[in-house]
Image (cartoon, rainbow, N blue to C red):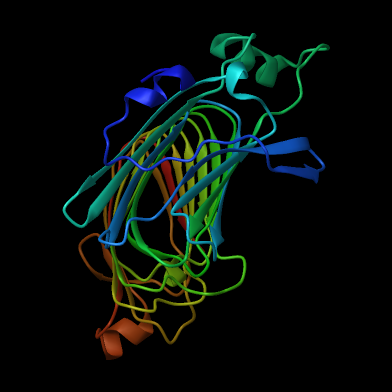
Length: 303
C-alpha cells in the first residue's frame, strides 16, 4: 500500500485509526496526528518495523494505550508512505515506511544538506510514541536526516537500528532502564553516525555492531546491568567506546590489521595474544563486559 487511499484495503483484523484532527503548537509549527494503532487484547508482543527515508524522527515512550502514534508537521498528501498492521496469534506486526521526499526529491535533499540551499524548505518532523504497556521488538531504519530514540521505561526485547547517512542518538532521558532484559541489540552504520548513551540501561545480553564508513559511539560508563557481550566489525569507520568504572570487569579481544588504528585506555593491559583486560577482570572475570572486535581500515578507541 503506497498511499493513504489504500488503507481501505487492509485486512479485517487490522486496527487503524487515521486522523488529522489533533494539532500541537510547537516550535516546528503545527504538528498533527497522522496514525495511531489501537491495542488488541490478545496481543502480547509488538513487532514494529519503522523506516524513515529522510527527515527528523523522534521516538518517545507514552503511557497511552495505543501501541503506535505518529505525529508530523506536514499533511498526508505531502509525503509517500506505506502501512500494514497484522495480528498473528499473540503477535501484532506493524510496518510503517515514511518516504518524505516531497517536492525536492531525495538526491536534492542530500545536496542541500551538504552545500546549503537559500530556498531550503522547513524541516520535516516525525514524532513517534510507543506504549509503555506492551513489549516490543523494534527494527528502525533511517536514510537521511536525524533521529532521536528515547527508550526510557519501554519494554524492548530486541532492537535493530540501521542507518544510511542519518545521525542517530539512542538514550534514556529519565534514567529509567529497559523494563525487560534485551536479547539482542544490533546496530549497522553505513556512512552516518550512531551515538548510544547509557548502553547499560538497555539491559542487553548481546550487542552486535557493524560499522562501514560511519561513526559509532557506545557509552558503557555506568557499568552493565547484566553481563554484556559486544561483537563489533569496523570497515573504514570509527568505533569509540567509553568504558565503565574500574570495579567492572572488562576483557577485549581485537583482530586488527596494519592499516587500522587501535587506541586502548590505560586500564587495559595485555593478557594474551590480541587480548586485553582490566584489573577487575584478572581478579574475578564474573559478569564481565566482553568485547570481540574486528577492524580493517578504521579506528577503534577505548576511553
